[in-house]
Image (tube, rainbow, N blue to C red; front, side):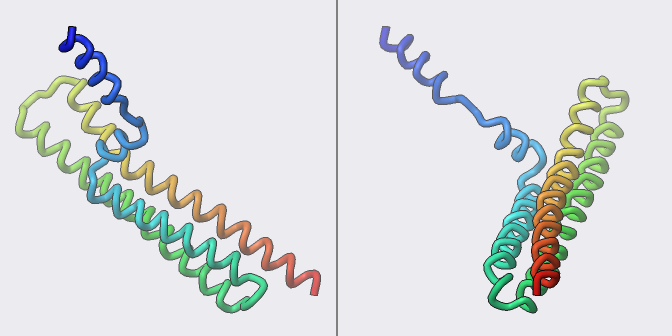
Length: 142
């Protein structure tokens, strides 16, 4: 009875988050670097909003920093994807003729970094768009 209860309890502890699973599948190095770029972009956007009324030059500097960090995340995503594809093709070469399931799994993993890089780029670009729009709205009203 005890072992059955422990087995039932341990299965409940193994509930996983699909986002964390995808993050780990994409490779911790590149996915972590892209996440850092996303967090930096969000930080720069927030600082741009905070400084928009106080110091317009500083707000524009944060827009440029957001642009740079979002582009870095995008490029890191594609670099991780290319390295993942090279790794997948190396394993295909070593195996001879792999099954389509193995090949498809390798392609999926290699594309996760590019997808996350694109996601972080889009989020940052939306923030930049809103921040620039609000800056232009302030210039028109003055």
